[in-house]
Image (tube, rainbow, N blue to C red; front, side, top):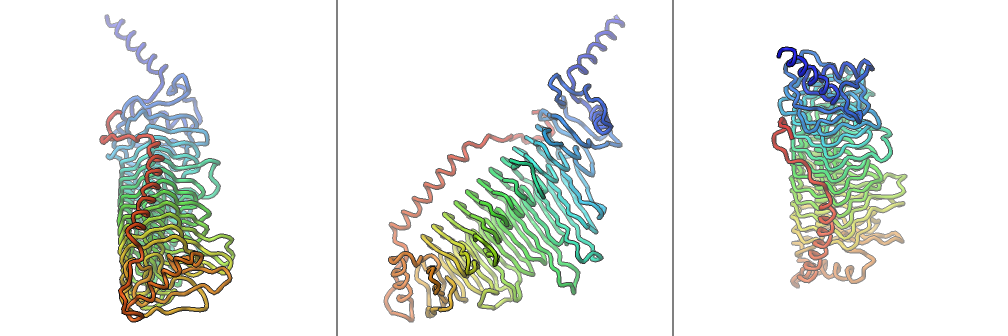
Length: 586
């Protein structure tokens, strides 16, 4: 009988080895050692050469675990979780090109503490530090705490992956991600960047052809407090360079509090925070943000519901923000419901903001802006094309505080329902077309407008303001050497400019119209003239509303049609996992 039992046990071990797979922490450690040594891993592979987890892996009994180095192949977690793991880096240091890691869960009982030595770039994510392959259906619920006292190089930290060069799809982060670090004052020319994201830290340089991030979700808090010269903080990805981001959702809170460089220095920090991306240099499509975004450091703060900064020839399209966006920066800020700052030919199209947008910091002698869709748009002197905002709608309130800035110029504080500030140049013009604002716009200083607070070299067409505008400043609608002053008084319902506004009309051969009133449309221009003439002080006649009931209904119907088309597209999204117990077998 004893011999029979031994025979059966040996047969079971043989069958398990033949089937491959990893069922315990000891087996995972042995597999990692074999990979790192370049040895044979056939014992853990199935007939297709794939490695599978066969059970949840409890790492509490492992004293030393050599993380998997350069992994080539397919690793399938089968929905099983890594439990009770304390680490200083990802399970995989590098997922090689052509390799796949999928269906892996990092449980809430796991935690990572990571810091760089100041001499090398840092990449850290719970599943992979660096990905050149495909990460699919991976989930992290563990917390990550990044600290760095003297960084000389870039740091990339994300819940799932640190640095991504190819594809991350249907991944999720539910853990809190935090960072505190700075660059050393002993290196005055160093400009290390911090890229921190709920799912991904970011990507940099040349990615693989066809790289993208899609159908990812973040529900964890992403918080930064440091003095890196440049920081990118995002709910999905910190810094995406030439990698498309689409169909992603952020539900976590985003908070950035960059500290200024040492007192007396002429250098300042720049922080970019967004519900989806801190900074994007690739298309951002069909993404939604439900988490509040806040910047409150002593830095130039670019803050938005979708992208803090969109800085490349790209499209931000069909994205919605539903959460408040706020900056209390004590240096300078550009705040937008969708995009904070755009300095390249970015197209912002078919986007909607429903969250409150507010700048409530200080901006002494520096321009700060708040816009329901985009905070600030500018075109470089050598630009071939400028940014475009089209078919967007703002329903959130936009407001600016006094900011210790009483300038009534381009260096003042600008607030508007669509774009706070626009500055094209003589060669190229930005344009704002077919946009609607229904939110309340209020500014205690500088300028405010229903469509645009300050615009220079910009074309407007088909825009409509249905919200109220309050403020004591002036509104510039278009740039030229000639100006027309509108007398002080209460603006009529639906007017683009708030009381006591200065409207600048184009003097160049390419006529540019006032904000929301294109010069190419004679009827609209005549209507605008009637509105101006009916302001109190110009005439005692009662001002007629700019938008009739029929126009409002038509606008609402057109917007509804666009939203229905967008929702049809979104129904094509595959359903993501809704498992609430990451440690359980799915």
